[in-house]
Amino acid sequence: MTTKTLKKPGNNGKDAVASVHDKIMTPGTKEHAAFTEKQRQVRIGIINVKSPRPQYLNVRAGGVTELVSHPFSRKAMIQMEEIQMREKTKVKEARKPKNPVEEMFWAFHWGMGIPKMVQTGEKTGYCVGIPTFKLTAIKSAIIDTLKMQQPELYKKDLQRILFLRGFEDLHHAPIEFNAKTGLNGRLDYAKLANGSHDIRYRPEFFPWAISFQVEYMPEYWSEQTILNAIQNAGYLNGIGEWRMERGGAWGRFAIDPKLTGKKDLLARIGKAKPQRINLAVTKIGE
Image 1: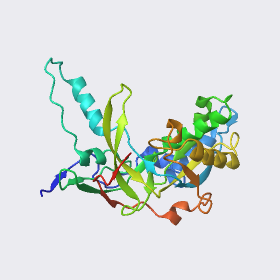
Image 2 (image 1 turned 30 degrees about the horizontal axis):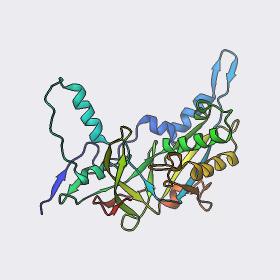
Image 3 (image 1 turned 90 degrees about the vertical axis):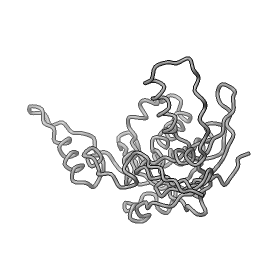
């Protein structure tokens, strides 16, 4: 059995240096405090302009059903770019066979640095990294639920007065799970829009949890409204593949009442640490 190491683009799992934008957008940093204070003290002539003062709420949600992630694959994007950049040809290229390990690797959301993948066989391999989930998915679930409950509201208005951020990454939140007992590599048969069928390799997490911070304007939202919206989104919409919005049952979540609202939430749950992740298929979907 041969061992093959494939290097992927990115920072190889190392923490990236936080950008100025991330520091400004992260409460508690000196850059954020200086920026917000400067925004509040805008003066035009003899008029003092006051900016709104956002409020922050720390939330931890736990999975009620399994979470299955499958982002638009990096491999597909590279292939699309190659097709667009080269000249057209009448000769049809031979189809490349699927690599189950590589397909499984790119089915994770690597929001905090792309790790190296080590392939130890045709269908076996592993990597050491931190799987994450995009917070825009949770925001979308909240907005969809609010729109369903109050049809007179406009989504574009709801999107402007609600912002979600991660504690360690601005746009992603680490998935809290046990790599040995709470992660399975799935093989599912999917039906495409054109009627054809395809194979999907993707990870399944359960049990799982996710923590994030909500920034909202108290002029438009109350803390009670925010918590109700998140709880309803977890039961009526969900996140990830085959969620309720898509007619499925995966990706349901509920608010953790013991840790939600705690100002020191990150200190209580601890920072995410890389885990050794098995990239082999261990579960065949029905």
